[in-house]
Length: 261
Ligand code: 2AM
Ligand code: CA
Image 1 (tube, rainbow, N blue to C red):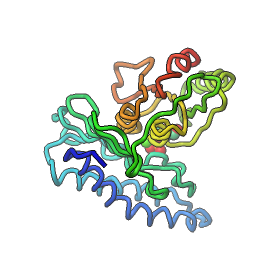
Image 2: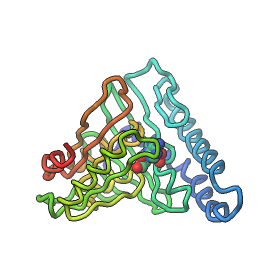
Image 3: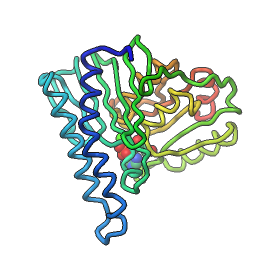
């Protein structure tokens, strides 16, 4: 692989380390699902432990870097020039239900631009990574977005609405409109992997409202480096960490955008 910045190497190392416990935890889920207690608390502690390992590893090399992480929140808030963006388990509900569609997602941002990132599904052993200017990879192979040109032939992925969403109706109408105009729509439950799958051509496009920055930070650079196009819509400037995202193979971007207007 030709990714060689110290930051990407650090992220890869942290992900590998954190994944060992996460794989073991996932193996326990099946037993917990049939127990009366259910897996809720167990998943929360798996999430926290994964985050702790990631943060410890990342901080070893750069104790001064800022961190935005799903559970821990903001660390070293004043350093906005160098930040790690961490989601220890993206696809928590899949994880909780014993479905191996979840990932560790870590991005590195320098002066408000994502420079590199890793999305790692430890159960499928699929590691997506990218670094600005040096391409995107799945394990050791270079990846590229699909070459699909027409929206009507495209396979699109989406997520949401969240259970607490106040705009469920709007999101469902969008879903209907998109599904009428594309080949098919999928809903897989991990924003990070949805983006990684667009990056390697499995899906042609992805859209979702009400995401958090940590769900998509690593996906942004992976998709861009794979030749895709990432765009945000109806951004609420008062919530900079909340995003509505549209991410495609570039070719179908404008057409998909029209469908979600
Ligand atoms: P999570 O698994 O880390 O919670 C599912 O459509 C995607 O939306 C996942 O990436 C999920 O991330 C994200 N998401 C963020 N907040 C959510 C919420 N409150 N409910 C469901 N999914 C949420
Ligand atoms: Ca997430």
